[in-house]
Amino acid sequence: MPEKEMLQKNIEEFSRLQRYMKLSEKDSPAYAEMKERYIELKVILTASGINLTELDRIKE
Image (tube, rainbow, N blue to C red):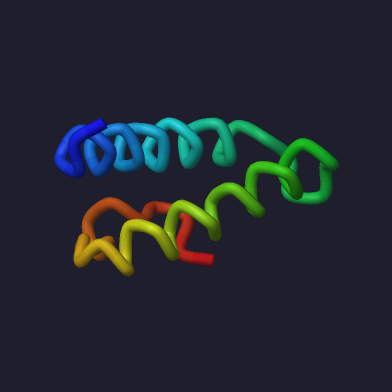
């Protein structure tokens, strides 16, 4: 998969995941799992040079 497509996929997943996190209780097991993926995606996107200032709505 080309790098541009991979970045787009990760950005879309990051945004979708944040919407799900906002709908979940912070003390739920589901939220804990989503937070792990949120951190992974945040690291991937940051390492790829993506500025998350506008994209990151959770800010954890």
